[in-house]
Image (cartoon, rainbow, N blue to C red; front, side):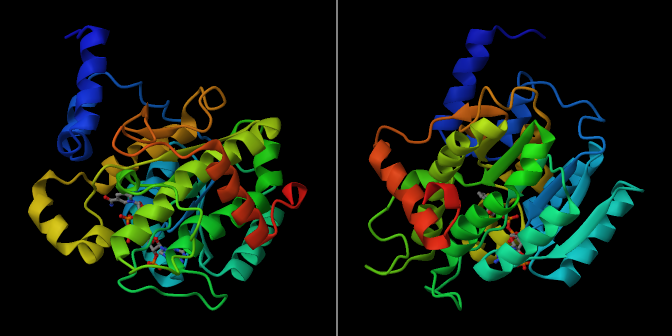
Length: 327
Ligand SMILES: NC(=O)c1ccc[n+]([C@@H]2O[C@H](COP(=O)([O-])OP(=O)(O)OC[C@H]3O[C@@H](n4cnc5c(N)ncnc54)[C@H](OP(=O)(O)O)[C@@H]3O)[C@@H](O)[C@H]2O)c1
């Protein structure tokens, strides 16, 4: 059945603004009637794709999706044993896939530099880098380098890894970087006054949402930085998917929404689609869900100013020392 485009656009926006129908499995079930076509089955043939947090949930589903499109996947995992188990599971579904597990703790900035440099040597040409690793610690936790854990994992580690792999991404000529953010980021403004969450009462969902908000604007900043290298940068939100992370961090939410949650594969769909979408450069810097760009803020919470976004970028550059050209 051919549904008029005006009607599908209206329905698509309504699903997004009503949150529950758009974020649950109802969203993709309806939207696949009109969203952009699937990538060709060989869209990533021979391309190398790196995915962080690839041993579980959405990261594993992203690795699977990329492997199905022919990519060689570097699975960057904190827990290598779980990484190998995930790799074997993917291999059962995509026999012959090229999957390599690399140890990488995104919150350990010195380790990220080292792993990134090693990967850059081994992979001279990289099609895509997916910043998927995510955490929601129950208490404020500092890394051994003294950074708040969600900030280090979601923002500082990915910032360094993007810089370290820039040369390999540039060599591809059509590369993409995707930050897997969250719809939860709508609940928080961009906090550039206290990015390490040293003031006020720490709440896991607030720390999580603040750093997920930072990812969206960091992706915008990287999009501007990388445009000269023909690398696009995006952020995405997966909706609400049934993953080990959601079960552990939000048990009540997971129980109540149970059957309405998306599968991990459905949650990873837009990220995988972005890796192979043809118009990467025209749409760089946007925030995506269910294969469409979404607003980065709603009326109830104003958008950050350009100066606040610049301050986020300066904070990342000054804290990590990269990119050196921007210091
Ligand atoms: N599921 C959803 O509904 C949902 C909604 C919005 C956003 N997201 C985002 O989607 C991403 C994946 O989440 P998920 O639901 O798939 O959760 P998950 O099943 O808990 O997976 C999280 C992954 O991140 C890895 N990770 C955590 N800290 C790490 C670190 N320091 N270094 C390297 N890897 C690390 C975990 O590895 P270990 O095995 O070592 O713990 C695991 O592989 C996260 O960024 C999350 O914020 C998910």
